[in-house]
Length: 563
Image (cartoon, rainbow, N blue to C red; front, top):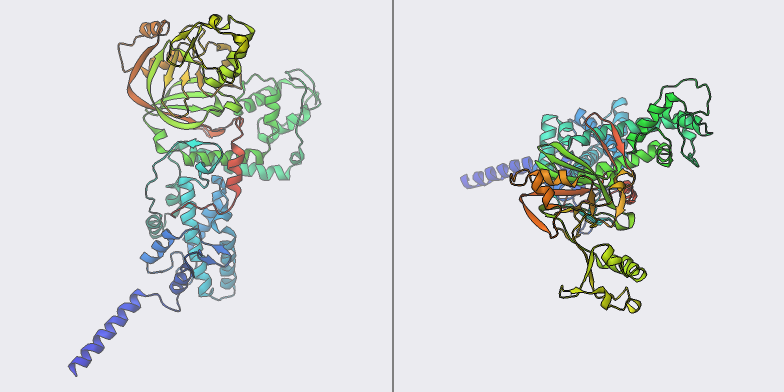
């Protein structure tokens, strides 16, 4: 009898423990478990027509909480559930698409809840389980996209070689902590890129969406592309001036007034014109040229697209770009910045690759400088440019301080070659330009070894830095301030005085100097950013890279692996 009682007691204890651990068959937890369990390994879990993006993390999240709902409490949707829905809608200000995070389906479930509430009824259990899972899946994917980016840069046609270390995000634990503490907004902001300009750019995109609303309501919404045949200077008259004035009004760059002559470019418009020129990277001279007209033709939606693309780019950048010492080159802005301890100690204009010789995006470590460099002409330039010039002018090599080298590196006398029989395609020699003021690399080059064979160098063509569009090179970066750059790089090596640097730049042979440390170099491509005051800046997409990213951002359900 005692044995039977003991068995019954153990059975009752076992049932009690199972009841605590196993989901209730009639409760929300039971339906949550059913939603997460696929019928087969090949099928992803679905709620209605909404396929869940997350698999690993969402199972771990609910498994650790014994499938208890995260967003539903006492058969109701509490404030934090509404907050999560709001955050999904706000994703558009990150340049993301809220519909990627079940926004429409979640709104539909919320509407059902509100309708049931008004009728004095409870929302049915299966719907509550569905919206709970969808909110969780949305948090997981939104967090992942904010931290890593929605688009995989390695999937694009344009090479992206700026690698980042991706830590274990532990999104499920962060979600649990956010729900428990009620700090959902802070949790989501924790996934933002660690660059102060991100929030400024996000605020700017929010404002651009407001501009788009106004654009759709105001008559200016019907504007057509402006065209001019020649530049318009202050005092000139032009049929397009009324339209230009209206667009200055729209963007807030000019307060409305009654002009004496509607078609005249009067003095009141000059500052507004200069403002838009600065915003789009032009010389603020107040003269309306083709670049200024192109800027005026940008509608809010065009600028929203550009802003969205560049918010995504920031999400790709590694935190190492915030290193204490960094050489940052934004090819779209034709500018190099040398940053030390978060301060910009040198800014210089640069010349970058032409559209068909675009400067790539990558990071590397600068390790040495070469003063008075020689230039070994790339084979493609030799065949396509140098050989044809030699055929026209036998003295071309001597005039340009160039020599011919055979495969063993020995010099070859150009006069010993019958140039009439030379084929550019099979030309067997190497052309090298010797050091000098007219060397194509100038007086110094700065080396950060990389697979792209790209480096920073001086140039004898100093007048080119005055141009606004400086996409002029074969891919390497020409710097306007080579001496100042060398001086800062060697500032920790006291023996390298100004006099010694100047002397090294005018030798007949190369002078190689190893730096006392390796400095990160990042070649990036930002066509939009914001400054610390929230001012927005845009640049031309000189390499046509923005469109592909924007199309990928607009596509739905781009899933990161392993989530």
